[in-house]
Length: 102
Image (tube, rainbow, N blue to C red; front, side, top):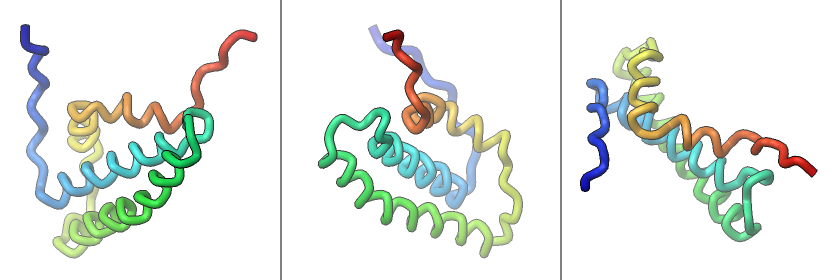
């Protein structure tokens, strides 16, 4: 049995798609670095090292959007793209985990 089909991504410019990809890459890395969720220092260290280049790629996407005259972020459209790409679950790893009863 096949998994349910995801809804289609909304129409995005190339720069908006790069913005979303870069943002999610940074979120994924921050989730791996999160001291409340990290399991090993080496994995967190590798994620921190990769964060530099991912942040640079995110900056380049935003710079390109700005240079092309895309001065507004269409939050509703980009939020829908984030939802399709599982952004809520991925961003949740950056937050504190719920308390466990002691």
